[in-house]
Amino acid sequence: MVFNYSSLTRDADRRRGFLHCSGKGQLVSEATVTQLHRREGRREPPATPILADFLDEWLWSKQGLRPSTHAAYEIHVRRFLVPGLGRINLQELTHRDISAFYRASVAPKVSVATLRRIHATLRAALSSAVREGLIVRNPALRTCGGSG
Image (tube, rainbow, N blue to C red; front, side, top):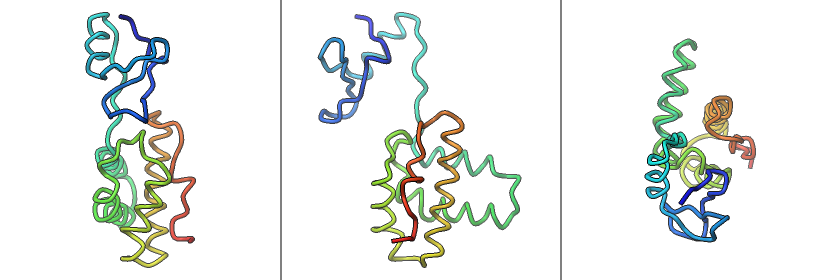
């Protein structure tokens, strides 16, 4: 059985870990697809990290910033973003996830100005993910941190 990456899509109505092959009309486990591709000598598609892992690498890459800026980014990432959104796969993160996180977890605890700074940190990190080709669009651009 030969699968083309372009014909495989995640079936939102099914359990996670399965892909829908549009040409065959069947569900196939991601593990099966990986095994088949290895047998055929194909490279596996690059795995997308969870947001926590990406933010950790992004912070590490920001060593050239002023110490106060880097410290602020680190507080935003470690205290707010990773605990609230860190488990979400980078490609699966949506503006709705971000908005719900702000409403439920962040907004009740911080000022509007701090919420905007946290949002700016997330937006900058996700813009970097777009530049690196890890995601197609920045979901933070469709979210207004602190403006209502």
